[in-house]
Image (cartoon, rainbow, N blue to C red; front, side, top):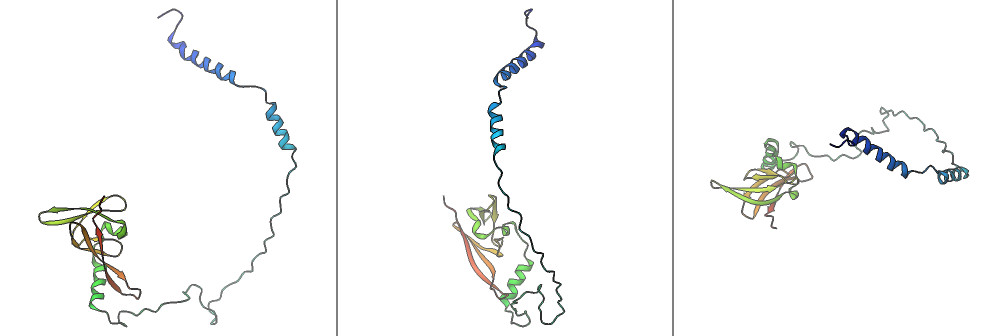
Length: 188
C-alpha cells in the first residue's frame, strides 16, 4: 500500500467527484422559467358557467294496498309453466331429472363443451380413456360415464378419433331433451 492512498478515503473521494459532476450540470439562470410563469399568469382567465339549478324531485310514497295498482316487485309477465302433476311426465323426463339431481359434479363441467379439446387417448388394461384439454390448459382423462360441459354432458363412447357425449338441455317449457355432441381429436 502506498503512502498516499488509504482504502477508507476511496468512497469519500468518489462521492466528492459525483457531487462536482452534478454541480457543474446545473445552472442558476432561471430567467426563461420566470418569463413563462409571468406570461401564463398575465393571461385573462375564462368564464366558468354556473352549475345548473337542480329541481328537487317530488317524493312519492307507494301504496301497494291500492287495488288499481300492481306491485312493482312482481314480474309484469309471467309464463305459467305446468307443474309435473299438471302435465304427463314421461319416463325420459323422470330419468333426465334423476340424473341431473343425483350425479356427482365433475371438474370438466365448469367449462363449455366447445372450449374443451380432445388431444389423444390412453389404453390401460383394456379400457380406453380420452385425454381432454380444458380451457385453462389442464389435461384431464375421461372414460365412459364421465361428465363434461355445462349441459350435463355424459361421455357415451370413446374412440381413437373422438369422444361422443350426450347432453341434457332444457326444452324451454320446463322439460328436458337429449342432444348428441362430440369432441373430435385435435390435429396439429
